[in-house]
Length: 419
Image 1 (cartoon, rainbow, N blue to C red):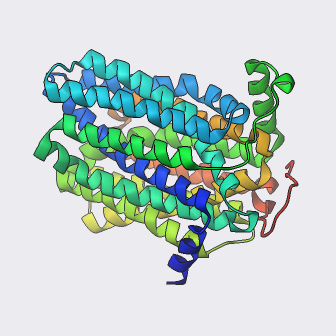
Image 2 (cartoon, helix red, strand yellow):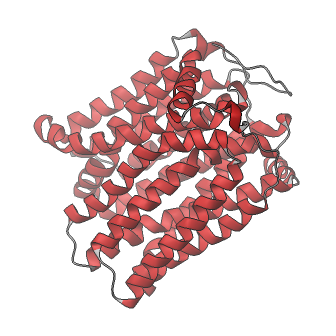
């Protein structure tokens, strides 16, 4: 009860309350959209390859745009970036919804809008991540980071849960209309935020390339930062394909298709449990603890590998998925907080953009090579390799002093760590 009361106390800060409401509603719609989009493509006569192209167009737009989103997030008021992105996404998703409901939608339209929405999300993503620090006092930042992530994860669980029902009951067009409405609500919330602008004066701004170079220099100034961005690249490179390509096949063949849905639900439950624990647990060396907990993500691919050998057990699969989500969320909260507390305010959005690039770039590559490699070596063996890489790379990161020694701040400070 104390954890809940502590988070509710954070909501006394008006700007934080508006920020959390906006990102939570956006997460709800963002969880509905992929399910609705998949069925929309299929309803239009598209194949799995067509769906792959639509999703790839969205992912490619994110990769190309996200670094510029970081630059703009440090140049312009961040709430303006977030409001503009949400308002534009409301319009684009509204067009898709109307097209599908009216019967004149096409796969080409979905692809074009996917590119636009991917770009919009990437432009606003770094600003959104950097905004938390501007909405609460320094002493409340740890709980604010954990509370925001908890609300987003809870909204995602609800969104994934109701998405199929919305599509089945009302059709893909109406489900996407719900997504569009969430963007409208988010745009209103972001527009009401009133924080001190952190943008630099126009005469002091270098070129876009100069800004990117300065952002990269800030990343490489902190050993723990570039090291764990690299570790995240490995995580997404290996686990992206294991989850999206191998998991449904291995688990579906051994335990049935419903078991894969239960596994993903257990994964999200782990996220929520990790978020609740993070509201109360504040280790002094949070990055060290979080990185150690990140090694627990190996549990999920290892549990899936047992299914590939014919020894799958539903309880073990669900436990592996839960432990994965729990460990990843503990890491994510402490990672986010470490960035917030140790990166200069005027470079924060750019640093987040480099962090996002590490994920966006690697995941499509992992999706591409997982199938051929797994076919060559065997699904179960490749899942073991995936688990070993994920767990081993996290444990190896603990050998670096900058990861072990970085301390969580408990009070206001304007110093940033160079380690």
